[in-house]
Length: 315
Image (tube, rainbow, N blue to C red):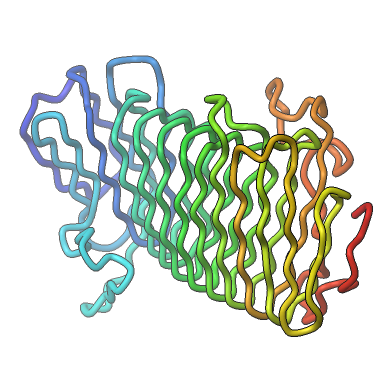
């Protein structure tokens, strides 16, 4: 039966709750288990709690806002949360929600998948992998060691991590802000879907940075590393400096957009993708071979090596 507004439920066993009235804001916070949020064109919202262990999970409706969370797991200070009571807990949560929802997802040790959401999305994760697919609104993510795997994003992307890895496949975003300490960033990008110039800014201490750009990219590039290797598949870009301060600069196309990247000891690589490689079209988008889909790693994973320090004409 459809659930009325402004109610709360203590969930201790598998259960499904339906809401006919539109939900405009969704807040999900869980420990261990899994979270799956799907944006749809329907007005109704459905919450399904599968496996659950430990303290009750609270489902609370507050007007247009829906909260699915543990009461002792607040959003403020989420990344510093500790389970002082020593409860073992686990929950599997699936939510179908209107695509325009404003979404907040917090996971500690849990995996999360978010797809089809057009509203703003905020993700905080301590550990575990979060997968984002087909999001067209602004995305803001913050993790400690959890990885982010994104595919077909077309809004802005803001990302901060300590050691988590960011992988963005077939992104057509107009703005990227990404910072890490040791986590790698591997970005496979198209021209922004909005037609606006791209504004990409990446910073890392020791994580490798690899960006694959369309061969007709329209960017002014300024990328540098102190102790890492630099390589480029674009003849228009020039490597300057010696070991200890290497800088890759130049203009691609008309240079309307901006790509700025900084690294201290990690490697830096710019790769080229064909304009009409077809990735992003159809249900199997992003699952193709490296020559027409996902970029291969330019540096050996898990090693301290960062490849040939001299510019490469073809990576």
